[in-house]
Length: 105
Ligand code: 2BA
Image 1 (cartoon, protein in one colour):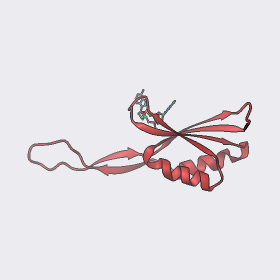
Image 2 (cartoon, rainbow, N blue to C red; image 1 turned 180 degrees about the vertical axis):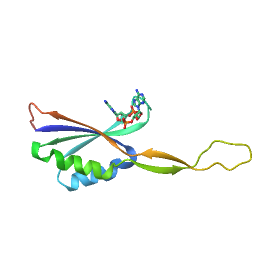
Image 3 (cartoon, rainbow, N blue to C red; image 1 turned 180 degrees about the horizontal axis):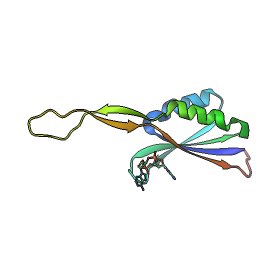
Image 4 (cartoon, rainbow, N blue to C red; image 1 turned 90 degrees about the vertical axis):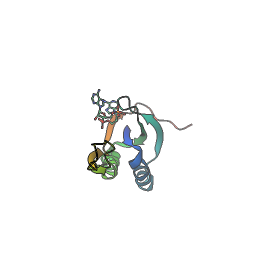
C-alpha cells in the first residue's frame, strides 16, 4: 500500500476531490499553507493499493494541470491603462510513500 500526499491549489481542489471520490478513492483533505508564498493550499492524503497509484496521480494531473491565466495588472503607469498580465496557475506537488501498516479500528 502507498500513501499519496498531493498538494494542490485551492481553486483546483474541489474538482480533484470530486473526481477522486467518484472514482472510488478515499481521501482526506487538509487545509494547508505554502511555506514560501504563505498562501492557502490543500493537501490530500490518499491511501491506495500499489496498482492504483498511477490512476490517482492521473486524476490529479487531469484537474491540476499548469496553465496561464490573464489577470488585471493593478500597477499604475501615469494615465495609460495597464495591460493584463499572464500568471501561471495550477499544478500539483505529489509525494508517494510506502505504508508500513494500515488499520481501521
Ligand atoms: P510549487 O513548487 O509548485 O509548490 C507549490 C506548493 O507545494 C508550495 O507552496 C508548498 O506548499 C508545496 N511544496 C512544493 N514543494 C514542496 C516540497 N519539496 N516539500 C513540501 N512541500 C512542497 P509554497 O511554498 O508557497 O511555494 C509556492 C511556489 O513558490 C512554488 O511552487 C515555487 O514555484 C516557489 N517557491 C517555493 N519555495 C521557493 C524558494 N525557496 N525559493 C524560490 N521559489 C520558491
